Length: 315
Image (cartoon, rainbow, N blue to C red):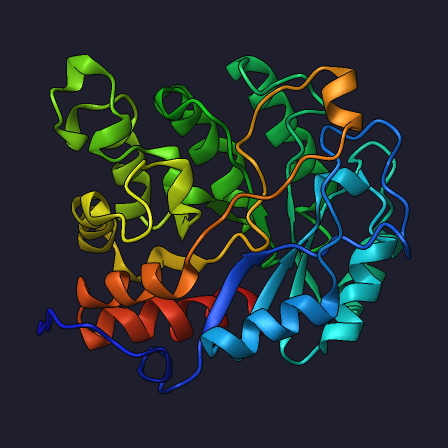
């Protein structure tokens, strides 16, 4: 494995193309937000994303349905078509109690290749038992009808993965659904570690259990939104050990996503907070990508940016 530590220009980052597997589109002028949303983001339109896509040089993307639209995927299907179905796939949000097989097949025909679990709906952000319930209900809804789809599942408690692991092995793995988690599984860099970890990323709760799931080929992890796990913007140098840990565990199960337009940190908001427009975070995606590229080999980069997302979403 050859890793060259040097700066990369934006034109060198994607010599074979590349996938951004986690971005959003918000266009409330075209599609109204859900009345029970947990967040009110400013507009972030298709054209603005196309400008971003051109700037960093990616060729494909995975549009992740914004939870501000609830479980109505009308906007998602329209945005995927507008972005170009051949170059963009979608990840939807469903209500597992009401979704029908026909609706799932229609989603697939429109370029949707997976779902994300809305923990806010289940009041499960801080409750592992409710998280298990949410996962089981979504597996039940899509498992028999959408073989090969992925299911994105992200929460703010990495320490929950140890309790979730047996259920994942028992209920999700046999279904054929590929489990994905966003934002480094919210494992932290040194600047955000609790004091008892003494700066050692391997001592944080959930580290071993998450790496075991990645190593076993059970869990895909997106290296997305570094500002959620580190305070060292814009280069996030402290994340190199965490990136290397994921890649050393299983380079076929690591992906990259921008999290454009950089939505705020996950939290349970009051009704008043949820309805008040909240600005996006500021991030230097090109600087972060250049640094990330310097930590990995050419083979690892090609797997992370091209091969892995093509296998997971591009079929």
